[in-house]
Image 1 (cartoon, rainbow, N blue to C red):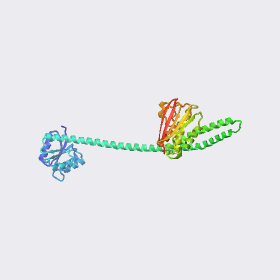
Image 2 (tube, helix red, strand yellow):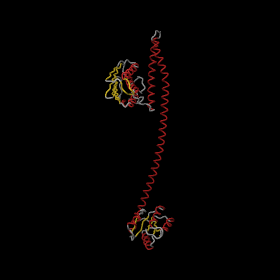
Image 3 (cartoon, rainbow, N blue to C red):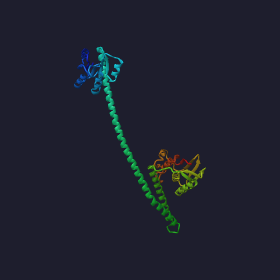
Amino acid sequence: MFSLKILIVEDDAVSALLLQRALEKNRHEILGVADSGEKALELLEVHQADIVMMDINLAGELDGITTTEIINEKFDIPVVYLSASSDAETMNKVVGTNPSAYVIKPFNIRELNMVIELAIFKDRKEKELQKLNNELEEKVKQRTEELYNANKELTKALEKEREINELKSRIVLNVSHGFKTPLTSILSSAQLLQIYAQKEHPFKAKIAKHSFKIENSVRALNNLLTSVLFFGKADADKIDFHPKKMFTGAFVKELLDTVRAGVENGVTINVELENLPKVITSDSELLYQIFENLLSNGVKYSKDGQQVEFSLKYENNHLIGTVKDYGIGIPEEEQSQLFDRFFRAKNVGIVEGSGLGLSIVKKCIDVLKGEIKFVSKPKKGTTFTVTIPVK
């Protein structure tokens, strides 16, 4: 049994003496004997006790229960109640003060020692638990503050990134628009040169040849700028779906005329139209981007003189388009990257391209809530199938 510093609060002198002898026999140190609550509080101001043995029924203004409430609040010392009564009313009063233990008089030494040990053990465990709770609360508070600060920094970083993206988009759009106007002028001049070259002139053939090169180069650069403009709008979330009625025949004719005008390798486009209504409702610009890029790629990556098959049909309120070529195909290990921006397969060789076409196709299909599938084998060609809901 470990030695404790104990304060006895008992107004019966005989009971106090018996209790003191019993405790001293077990090598405890008695700091004092108080016969009232007031005196007990005075002694605790001077001496640091490990435990207080408290009689419930004390003479004076402060009874044992009131004195214990003050001790709990001011000194945080464990209290063991002493009482000759164990009636329900007394017990209800006692429970409210959260005592460390309760001893019924008369008591024996063995029982008293056990109660004191349990009271000290209970008090220490409660204080350890309170310490752990305090540490946990402090850690939670600290962690919450860290998370709050981290969230503030993340919000600032995201806001900064948004500002940078907006600035980048504005720069891209402004620069691209700035190039568009002079390119249009160059293209017009090249076309005029081709007209002039039709007349008799000693350099007629050379003029026609070089003006044709200028026109093709300008068209290629113009297509690149169109792609850059498209992704500038995409990054700024400015690509919207604008459905309107469109004549399918006129749409297909314009599409094919544009693609065929850019053919340089003698590739022919075979067209099959099935069950197309005269008018559909969709976004013609997005549809044009999809099929123009797929057809242009099919032509570009085909060998000289090959064919590209283009079919378009209407079925169950969906426009289903297929573009099939017999060209270089896509390496199997690279097919998962096909719709990434600026991706170009390793087998494209010297064929020019920006790597943006299929990215544009995928973005447009997403906006139209359609889907795209493809099958490809190196040196055997590629087939793209696009399904787009229309009205």
